[in-house]
Amino acid sequence: MQPHPAALERRGVEPGKARFIIDVVLAIHRRAMPRWLAEPDTTLAQVMAQAAAELREVVAPPAPTIR
Image 1: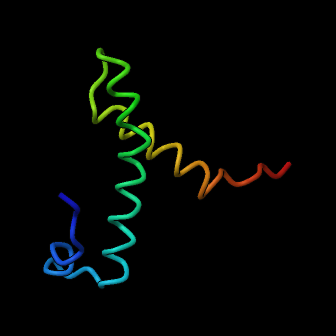
Image 2: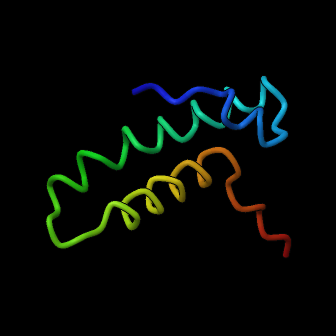
């Protein structure tokens, strides 16, 4: 079952943003699922959070430290 942006749109999310959110969540899920299957002692929520953190690091790396 493919997520549909209409569910988010019904909750007030702009259509383009809804599609973007779904694309990002699916990318995180694709990154996390193999890890979850390979690591039986971890939860899907844990590996989803790790994948989201990795995405955050790539998209918005920490600001450089000024000395």
